[in-house]
Every structure is written in structure tokens, then in C-alpha cells.
Length: 143
Ligand SMILES: [Zn+2]
Ligand SMILES: [Zn+2]
Image (cartoon, rainbow, N blue to C red; front, side, top):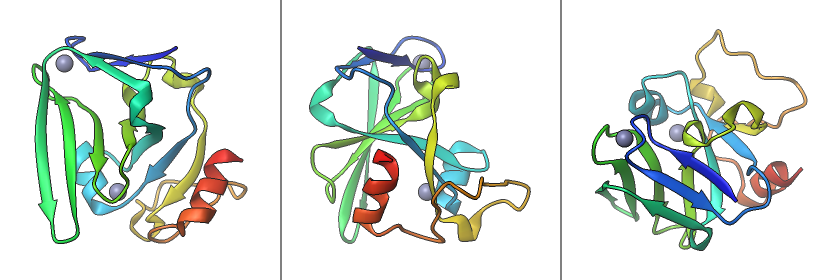
């Protein structure tokens, strides 16, 4: 079982996974603005492995070709995960909310065209300037 929580601890979650999931970093401007940081780190996990408890605040973001449903802690508003109608059944978990996050391994970087210049990515970690082709991206995460 893999577990995590928000900053204040009101929202906790558990995933029926045997090991910490692979994570990737996104350097796009949306991820920078929403996190207030240089990039976001996220894990893609089957939504049906995830059980969340606590006061979750849900916000739907509708754009022309998709609806993104963001879940936050309703007390401290830390972002926990989102789903997206373009990827049904997949939860995008904010990796910094995972317990044992110091053990995570970042397997890929996307939207590096927008990367802050002080961030150095190891040469052996796959990276793409914008979106990664889905098959190459999955292969990188599973590597
Ligand atoms: Zn909280
Ligand atoms: Zn992004």
C-alpha cells in the first residue's frame, strides 16, 4: 500500500500499489504557476487503485477538448490529484504529497522548452520540449 496526504493532514489517501509509482516532471508555465515552483512532479496511476478520505474540494476546469477535475484538500487547499476526460481512468497524483517522497525517481521531463534555466536535467533522463508522444512517454516511465 502506498500512502500520502495534504499539507495539513486532513486529506489522506492510499493506493493499492506494491511500490512507489514512477514520476515525471512538467516544466510548463501552467505547472509553474499552479505550484509556485519551477516544475510539477506527478505520477500517473489507475484511478481505481486510489482511495481518498477527508474533505476534498473539487474544481472542474473545462477547456475546448477536455475537462480536468482537480482535487484539493478542502482545509489547506494543497493539490492532491486530478483526472482528465482525455485520459479516463487515470489519476494524476501530485508526487510531493506522497509519503516517502524522498525515495521517488523522476523518469521523464516534459515541456522543457519552458524550463527555468537553473534546472539541470541528467543526460540519461528522457526529456521533451513540449508534450511527449504517448508511447514514448509510457516507455520512459516504465524504464
Ligand atoms: Zn490539508
Ligand atoms: Zn505542466
